[in-house]
Image (tube, rainbow, N blue to C red):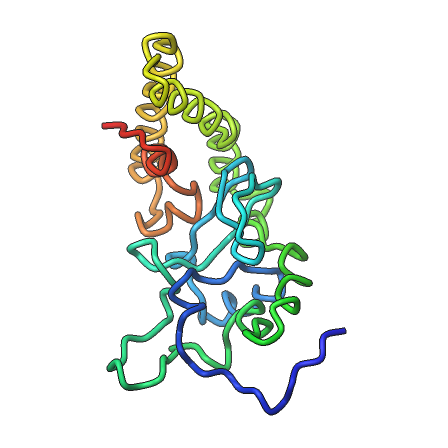
Length: 220
């Protein structure tokens, strides 16, 4: 049990909203059913991705996928409203906001940590196990696994750091081929379905060039 000081209220500084949108949980599914949340504002961090874990402040490899609210520029929560600097921050869905937002307390961070990895919402929960779109999602995960991409990229980045990239030409070629084929898969999915392009980050996560960019690699 976490006891929160009832005399301490949110300062509405917006810092938590700007640092990143909340991860989503099964408790948040009614917000999609009601139209409060849209998958066009969701990004999937796939199993095997290396990410910054906000509660611990550490770099970690995801053991399971995480769905997060994400602004179009990849920074902050899409429901944070712009207000004058002298005004408190404002949330456009306050009162119907996700579980992590309701749980987060600046004064009791352990409250968020206690639910952070529990009941994580997954793409299958929103798409349905038998849907054709989910079949495409599974194919993408199997063909372009995030851990393989990160392992290849990390190896290449390490070789470049030590100026021995000539020793990993095969890995460079493989990563480049994966990026090319994954990009083609995204285009094909858009061409053959009525899926809006704004749903791709939810369905397939981040494209390979975006995934490897933090390691100093550029794929064109």
